[in-house]
Image 1 (cartoon, rainbow, N blue to C red):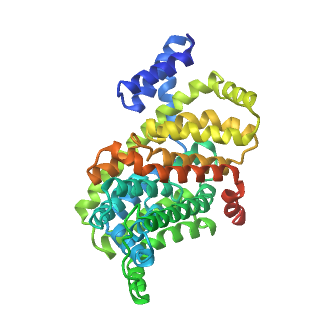
Image 2: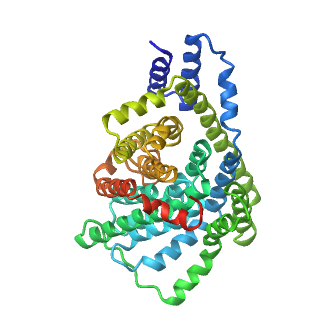
Image 3: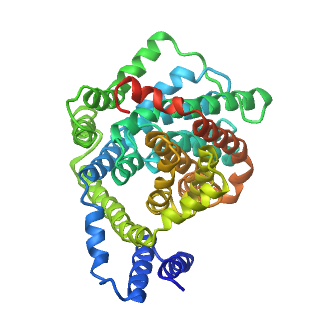
Length: 430
């Protein structure tokens, strides 16, 4: 048995035994190196250190910190109120509010887990009061959270850009139109379901212009954050990494000094949580770097590329293959580990087939967003079910229509390259 086969088998067994994924990767890597005997085990910590020393990774704790301040500082409540005044009167109003609120909040928090917990906590109880079946409310929240992964800033885009040498600002800009496509198709499905009686109509009285303006005035500060980030990046004032610093400071000032809904004690707790989450992410990235290095030194990407091209040299077949891989493993491995393992393996083949890096990166991020809500094991869906207090299995049937629509959107994104690239090209990021 060669080292790569042993490493992969060891990793699978350790994951099945419920060993934390980071330690499963580290243990499997060290076992493979030990069995080979000609590579010192010191390579593991060396590769781990080199894997996290990239400058763009500085954005990770800062965007996590921004999400913490935004989630705690009353931001989500103001955004939901604004969304209700905008679309709450349309047929299927509460479902549409969830999609719009998710678009607003995703552009601020950068995390699907933060989106699901913040927006879901506010809207799911209201939906249940409006006669939504709890499993249907959870499915709607899951679909909205999966769509929101493509709305920048997104932590996965930062990490993918750093490990693949892809423009992070380009990824941010490229995510807008695919996210809008997903939001639009979800909105059409929700409207259709409300019309057919599958979900409650749950409309509210149309808001007046004064009410819309009033709720907008309360939401304008958090909505201004993405404008500041992209205005600064596109204007050449700061890089995507430096934008994370601006976002963290801005969210702190808004939550603590303007809205005054974050106490100093809460701010300290947010800092502690950010430190813990950053440690987890960096540990995953570091150990995955060693894992991927072993795969690369044994030329697994080249072997896989030759195998895929032998089956079909068509780049669209490879894109569909990528969707299947990341859908499944994002659900099984909770997203980030799946990207850290499979992106370095598949990316060289994508480049060999002439796929644009931004196009491929956005397809992966979008697929991972849906993988995280895939029943019955998607981690974001687990969080939503805990909020709704239902079993994971209950969401399978109501989730199916939304998953079908979102996966069809992924296929459109895979085949329609210009949908992804038109905005980056317009601003010179591709």
